[in-house]
Image (cartoon, rainbow, N blue to C red):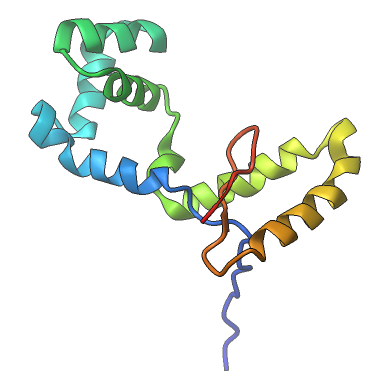
Length: 139
């Protein structure tokens, strides 16, 4: 019988913002006239060269809201793609925690591990959803 790869279950859960990002992507064409891929091609062809200028250009020239402009400009730079994919997010979440507790802060990792276990025991719906600098617990 062939062996199948077993995937280690993460202690972390996808951040609630992933559902928001998926909804934004699904509605982008209807709201703006372009899909994300169409926006990215257009921004790279006709937009300013840097992310900050692209955000302002998208807001001023195309009437996009701040968050929409930010996300499109960020994606045009190759960033933010873990924000709509739970699997990519979980990989990134693990990396965030590793980076938080590296170097001089490595000695804090055992304390963090115990606090995380305790926090996740408050209920079956308790979740830890790491970000770059914090690990929020939510229910």
